[in-house]
Image 1 (cartoon, one colour):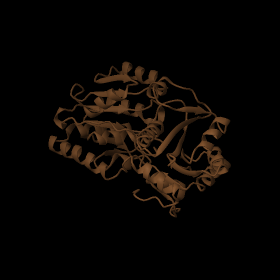
Image 2 (cartoon, one colour; image 1 turned 90 degrees about the horizontal axis):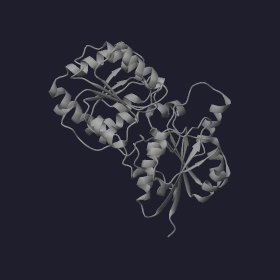
Image 3 (cartoon, helix red, strand yellow; image 1 turned 60 degrees about the vertical axis):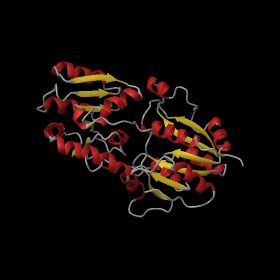
Image 4 (cartoon, one colour; image 1 turned 90 degrees about the vertical axis):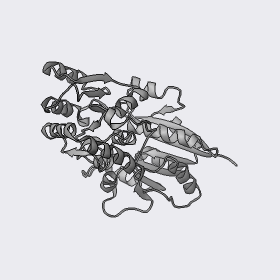
Length: 354
């Protein structure tokens, strides 16, 4: 029996982020299935620049890079039986339909209310998929409103989640991991930490990641003479997991309609509750045990840091347990994808998604 040929296509700006992590996790899981053959293609976006973190995280992985609608992309789609596209890129949708291949979409990004030809084309492209899986209810609602299409549903994206558990009483402080860009809220977090009335030795803040704001954040920390902050920069998966599981709280403070929030999912899988902003789909990712403030509000965030520091050991331990237990009921197992591909190839509806 011939294997099912799966092609996973994803846009890439050249940095390692949530979409790249999701793609590689799905590819790794499906490659374990004996009836699949898997290829991964990253399609370069307009301002693509391959960064060191992407090279590091993809080291040893079998992936290809292509340009928009080029011959390599066309050849890969022609090879496939089913294409799993990340977001509804019209060129990939057109080629997939031209070669009469099955198409499924994971939609990661919300759809703006602004109407123009570009957005109209993307909305139209999404209609041609056999299945549309939105990573959050927030994103789904922006694409389809109150009337949902057949074949559409929410399937929260995940990645190769970090493993481990540190007893709550052995954890300390706060941790941030993400790209150092304006919409991720790292500047708001540093402002909030400076304002908060905390014992900074007992409540340190670990900053992980890198990006355009690095020099500005370094300068702000130095100028204010802030103690308690450790800047680790870009870290590998092992270091990231170690720092997250040993923090009492992971802080995820974006301010521009975050589509979902993979960092919050990773933290909860380790049993670490989150401090988040009420931003886009992030409350879904952060779960019921998260502490929430408004986006771009350093005063409100500082108040949450103080609330977290004053929480009793008993309440904190209960939140830690619940945030991990509740997450298990919210995520599809990674095996969902191989099962779904098989059903689509056979012309059957996909079952099992929440």
